[in-house]
Image 1 (cartoon, one colour):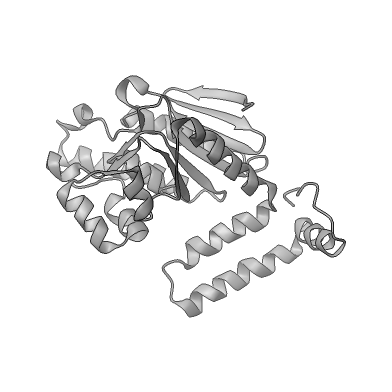
Image 2 (tube, helix red, strand yellow):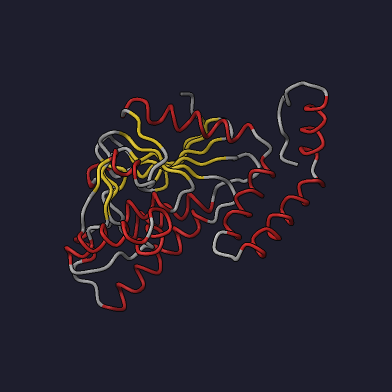
Length: 266
């Protein structure tokens, strides 16, 4: 896998492979746990992503043990109510930034995804994991609730009953069950995880980028709307594609029975 343009912002690295960006939480000695500094570094990387030459993002963790093992318990243990509120607000703002990126995001979960790690993975559009991955929201065992969107995203992804079971019991689930309940899209060996996710990211990046972004907007904007309003949202994004060069080239290529060599994001 050839990567270029790598930068490091504290505990987070960012690399490019063609039109695909790779964000890595790089704090393996702490199992990539999240603290204020790691979150600040992640925010800086997200803010620096260029939508002109990036069409998909992969989020992963350094090493083979942990995607993100959760928030830094030591840093949280002595927080006041106000400090906890500010920490939760800060984490949620960053995860929402990731979730609301106009381009598709894929989590490559390469080990533990607990607490804030599961919440980070759920902030991505698509999730694949390695066979050793473990998912959970263990917060009630620490005397707290999930704080970075776990009570909200988990319900939307796997259903109310299963989400309540996981959150109330602090029960972790392994990769096979995560796939069975719909928390992840697929399970791979550790060795095949990044190649599999990269192949998917590049397939996404090969499509018309404005159309892909409009699809994401239509799904996001319409997901919690009633159907009448939701289809009107789709109509808006559908029609907007017809002012793009990529639409004209895509349909022309189809009618001429040839492949589009490259979409130009305009």
